[in-house]
Amino acid sequence: MSTVSENLANDLAYLFLRLGKIASIKKVKEKRKNHHDWYHLYLCKAKVKDILEIKKDNAPFRFEKVKRIEKLATQPVYVYDLEVLNERKTDNFIGGFGGILLHNTMNPEDYSGTEKLSEVLLDRFDLIKINYPETVIIEKQIVENKGEKLSEVEFPDSLLDFTLGFIHKLRKNENLERFPSVRASLGLYERAQANAYLNNRKQVSLQDILEAFVSVIAHRIKLKPSMRYLTSPEEFIKKEFHKHTEEKRKEGSDLP
Image 1 (spheres, rainbow, N blue to C red):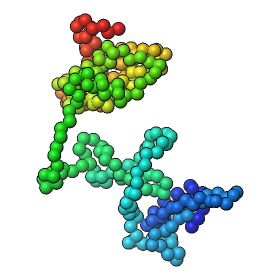
Image 2 (image 1 turned 90 degrees about the horizontal axis):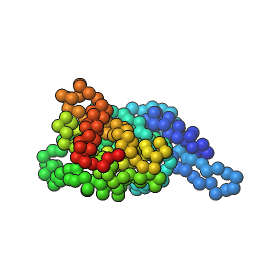
Image 3 (image 1 turned 60 degrees about the vertical axis):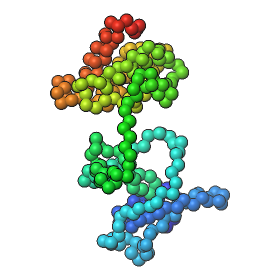
Image 4 (image 1 turned 180 degrees about the horizontal axis):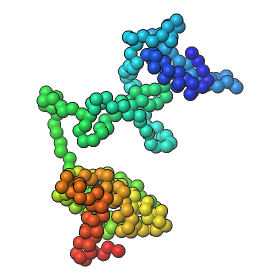
């Protein structure tokens, strides 16, 4: 079957999939002038006489070997998946032209959706434990090297040290059971600059950092049960932030 409509070819592929038949689609570049490119649908192991017949032994899906993976400069940069839970063991996704089944390694939460490695398999691995950066200086180097920098906004060193120092303090907080990662530090660095830029300021302020903390950190931390029913992550962050600010000022910090 052939058509010049990409949408029709895509819809037909899904229709045949519902009937238990696998369709592959090939785009044909038309060399003749005043003619459109067209799409040819091939039905796998299907005869004309039973093209619309539903058979019990027709598997609705199959596995295909990935020949190559390419990074594309597409716009927009975000990709959204339709997720279908399968007894909390695997997640299935449908995406792409022609209805391709995909699978990634994201789990709903913690270790949900995964299973422990057997002792036989685990015996074939060496385990390396990776912790957070040991010092603010190391984390600052990571943030400045890997984070996005707005040319229109300055992030003062004293405020960046203050911000990362607070992150390190949160990682030692006895009321938390999940701590902010280095990715959170990168997010704070970028969000604080964005806040300043949106408020027509050329320099990041304490208020920009506080707003960034609430937005970037609150969903990344997890309070222990003893605190979870007494306060929210947002309020916890604000309270700890103000406490950290006062402590630094008492120590003689030149915070604005």
